[in-house]
Length: 292
Image (tube, rainbow, N blue to C red; front, top):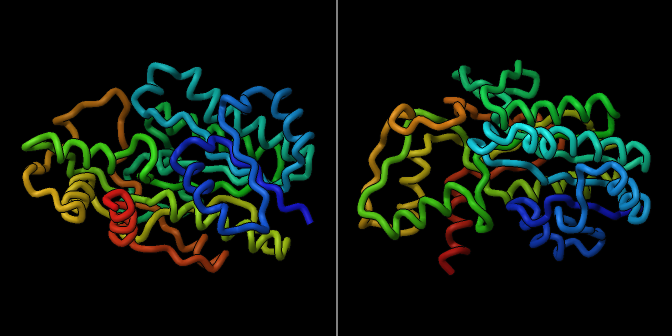
């Protein structure tokens, strides 16, 4: 039974969390790559690598995630977020491998006032969002053996993310301003990594358990960025910095942000029997490991 799993974008938040967890699953053989080892936008390079390694599953964690930067670097955003998923999907089709691809809540325009389900109409309002949606669509045109997971507001101990930025500012500043009119679900990358590995294990043990399609994964509950920042301060014990709630128009950005991108996660929970922690509990777990 082939238990090889290729993880692309392995040096990012999610890739690092999968790498950290993989030692707990000795029955699975993980191959971790990043751009220095494999250019997933190069069809020939991917084809050769896949032919040599023969993975059963590819988990694509690679993405161009600079939301404002994408407005100026449209070509690069589309290359990484749209072309690369198509290249990987084509290589998976040739090798009879399954593709798990990570997408984003930014495929929605944020005009809803109830959590988004997987088949809600997409309408991205930024280059980043549209490039990620294009990646989803390109995968669908290649083959059916895919699982696309849209997630939101990801954070971890690794890389650049809102939680780490707020921690740093809280220790350096007397006062910070955080927007209070954008709502979503903070998602701990380790929880998503656990979900992905859980799906992989269930699918390897029972190939009939594979239920291809689009799924939403985010920690339970929702909040504004301001509420997220307050909770970070509370758990980290930061008391000498004031957080002031402001509206988005106080900080005009190059890329528009959707105001509401809470994701309904019923489908992934029911399809794979996966429990999802509340965002406050997961934030506490993440911050505890940083503080230790």
